[in-house]
Image (cartoon, rainbow, N blue to C red; front, side, top):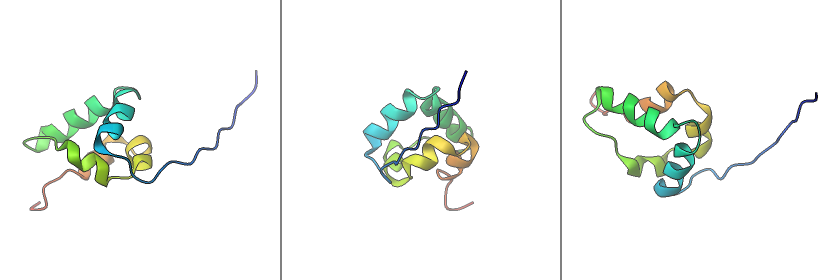
Length: 74
């Protein structure tokens, strides 16, 4: 048994629709992000997916990614 090392380079930002597709296919991450955000916010804005680095959306804990959707008034 060996170990495989994979080095990837992500585009910094992708369109909201592509980000959503990627997150839906990665461990239901999109659903978990929406659930986390809507616990404290009234809704989830898909358009914000295009404003957050795709690497952050994939790598950061869902709780940290969800903080990017918090209302500015808090």
